[in-house]
Length: 293
Image (cartoon, rainbow, N blue to C red; front, top):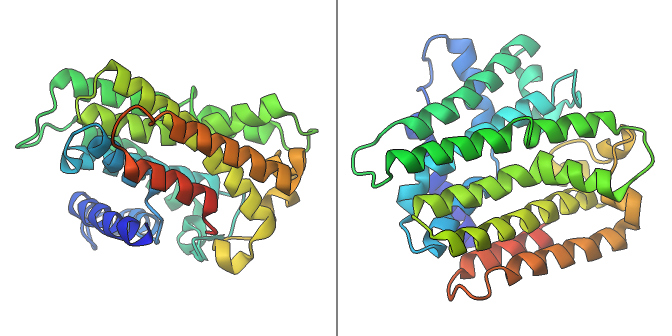
């Protein structure tokens, strides 16, 4: 599975390189900051999920590539802003200095803004050879906007900030994780399915898989914040606890959190049971559960 993910990550990186402004493009400081964060060595789980969903739904992964790139642009913007002093005030991300440390706070904010808006530019453009109808592209844009905005990731981030220092509550915690992390993972899978012209039943199965996998992904992140080293994570270990963030280990203990993650992954995999294909999505679900970094 690591080899498959490595190959898919390479395809995504090449596609991102094609759509990004080349090194030295004016304004140079801004485009350098955009490239610095985008090519900082991420796992590309979200775009890989988009490609895998397209293949599972009987489509061509290449038809979903621009949707895959769009979700990675949004994800990278969110990391830049999440690391800012006004948010989590982190110094390291993926083992290197965060964008605002490597450049400056103002440039980091603008780099995030530029990546976010670029995602919708990428999705909206009609491309030679594409079989996507205008209606499908509009739906994809709408789904990404909803997942990234106040009803999704941004709303989850606000709830996360509001809950710092509060006693752990499972309903609040699930809201945070479902929106802050889960919404974009669900959206990645849905965009891949839409790129493959999936029918209503297939779309429902993909959405269920995405919802459960997205929540499982963040539960595992919570566990890794407690159990992994700073070197393994590429960022400060224990930072969630230090800020009084609401996490699953704080609510259920590490073993209880692991049990919850296992249940969510099994639920996600169960959504694929009647599809007759989807091995790669099954393996990715196991990878999410077992990953160390």
